Length: 302
Image (cartoon, rainbow, N blue to C red):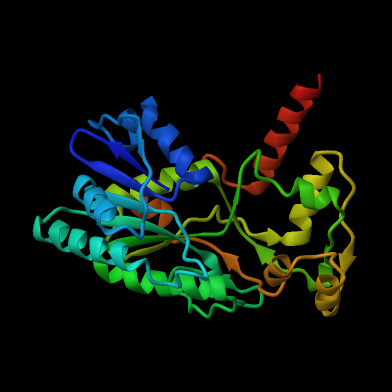
């Protein structure tokens, strides 16, 4: 699913129209874009479904759009490389963009901090070594390697949260986390802050530049779950040892994907998000999002 956002001088293609893509769309229709993020631009509301494997559709979309925000992840079926039609379209679009001498990146690709892999709780910055462990993270890193030489800036995002994107269902089901002595560090970004980072990266980012789109306040994952549970009046999840992860997956207490998050620990910060994009986060800590969700739930119950 793709969408177009037409502005006075540019038409922005949104490739991937999930939660963050829809937030970008809504943001572009509001006064914030005109007054702060993208002065002198007039977005309009029009969506286009595009079959990314259909060459004429891709060629038509590329002809209409001057920049792209790529939110759609690689999949097991497509691998790290986009479909052939999309690959050709992006390559032609990139050459045309560079030949025109336009400043800034051709587009923005939203990747994942999972490409850094396990750093055993160590601090991770944009220059840190990437050693992805999971297939989905390896695909993301490979996609970065394909798009960055073609003029795309890369935003590496961690766990995306919002008032309606908290692990409440997981907590209600009593799915375990690691005990404190085995716990791993995790990082977050509010979905709205990520949407704003995407916009700013289009105009202020640098081609092929990597930026960690994180709130800069990593915390132990179990501590994060406990904070959500306490704020929303839910029982805390049980804790298990790291050596019990495989057993928890085998008996259904934890999914294989969830277990993979407990096998990698890193404290991700960004040296570039504020200085290079000029982005001041509105949600600088996950706990602020949790507290906002608790207030909203309290108002709904009263």
